[in-house]
Length: 175
Image 1 (cartoon, rainbow, N blue to C red):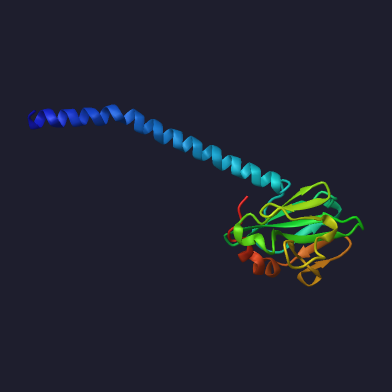
Image 2: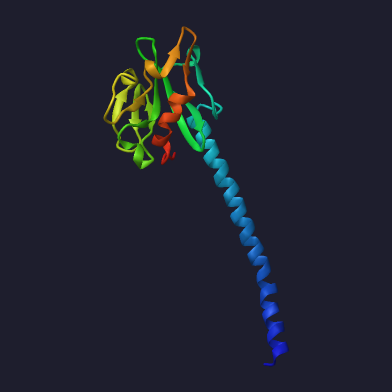
């Protein structure tokens, strides 16, 4: 085979492979868009379709809180966080970070609610909503105590500085 025949053959192979290459790139792009949409959809459902606060103080309207936990998304610089707010059986609104004081390093140390119980997705520890904000240490959500928030009859305000100090606990967080 002379040099000209070799070049024609090489170019022919490239031209024959071009539709496969373009098709593969398109499939990858469609999968990327689909998976990205799915992840956003899951995050929105977990957060009760609440819009993420990206900086500043977080305000929780007490009249919006029920016995079903609300998960408020918060963005501290590049770190996604969630805050739990739920109405306890005594009528008070309890708040905590949606990350476990023990399991947060795993990235799966967050909670989901089943009936009146929150369950750690990493270790399976279970506790009632009445325990939120009252129990410190161990496998429990990090309480947002009175010194980290201000509250009146209508709302709870959690200062940006309070939230920012806990952002490192969400560094590995994934849902």
